[in-house]
Length: 595
DNA sequence: CTAGGGTTAG
Image (cartoon, rainbow, N blue to C red; front, top):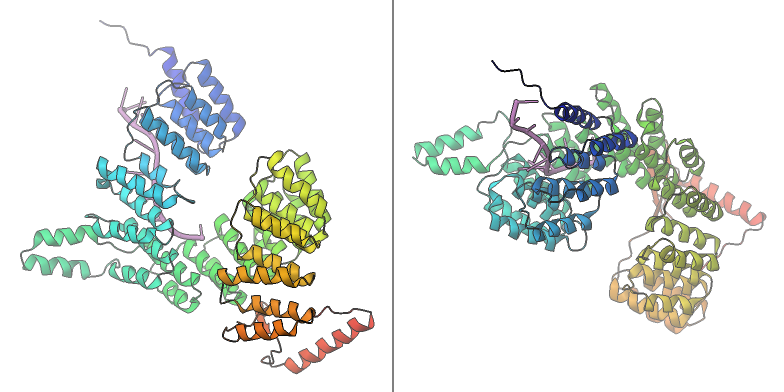
């Protein structure tokens, strides 16, 4: 006779906690999470090998990385799982450098990486040394034999193909060598070619894939089995794959990206199965090209099939509207958002602010911004930048002050907006102050955009010498935008000598841009240097200058026009109106500045 | 209950 064994008290406590932690996955509120963390501490379970990773994951979801690190640091000898969990947390929160540092520490501590470690780490391979990092991981993975695991080579293909034009070749080599491939391998490779702009290569792979219910599999297997080549048949079988909705969507995306909307549409219509993603891709594709009618019509069709736009759908379409200036479609999306719960999402409101700002409707942008319950850095940045770009420099700077007062820590994007605001108001001294402050007070290292703003401000303010000095002494190589900024400053202040220098640099960087010569020619003309005008005219003779165009949105569609364009059916009426406006402007005293 | 973490399209 034995007494029933009652589990120790801590076990039930532990299971209760695990239950709470599992729940946190669904509704993760920071305070609730910290409360549970405190409970694990009290019952000495914060070092538990099953609970600690869950805490780290939960903190990762709530973006409380310092707390996640804190959990990790409490563990004397972290195991592989804990390292993996931390690497994932850092990667998911865009702390890529840190993720690598943790990986290096893992190596140093002698904790073995496993086949789970690498997919996490590969996601952190973006940026400047992306390709080198992927190559390094590739070498590790080969040595440790993890290529056997289909997830690892698939992640490698994805990361290679995201590491610039050089990576795509390595991705393809790996793809070709893989003895076993699945639909993700194929799709990742196709997406790689799409990103590289090599649509014909993407198409070739897509065509090699089979469609569900096609007979090609059987035919292929039949042929080989009749020839007694079962091994070969099996080998081929392991490497081919059926298309799925991702394969189709990637191709639709590819054609949208290169602007071949007819092709995109043809594939879209042929898709055997659609979800929200391809609908979003094609609608945003039309919107980005300024084809509001088609986009709107497809949105109707999508809703007819019973699919409801989600967060990603509205954000993608709004971003496309912002890019092409489709205010009308943007407003339609806005009213959809107001009739759904999507308006509570910060990212959705940020997309709305950006759309309204880029479309020039600052009042609407402001009212969205003001109506937000909670704002993040992106909300403030979008609003500051929106105001700055539309000539409300003082209001932008006021908003910046308010942002700092509310305890939001500005980032490098914020300062692009702030400096841009100074440019538009001509606040040279203010700009200098902000430029120094960004490094001193916020630890932000100025990037080329910040130098560009400063050079623009100095140049416009007539401090040409100082602007040139800054361009030459800054720790970054001046690009075409910098020299272009300097050139237009020279034009405003009629400085022939410095303009010549800027043009020389520009010709090295973009020799086929006729605009540079045109500006120089105008500067010579303004200074009465007709020899210079003649010389530049000869230089630019062999260069085709694409006509600059403007566009306006009217009745849901985009009208594009160039200088002296008479292709519009009502062009004579349009020009009459323009003349009338011109006369009216003259009457009220406007004198145009002509170069 | 004896456990956990991974790759592709918006």
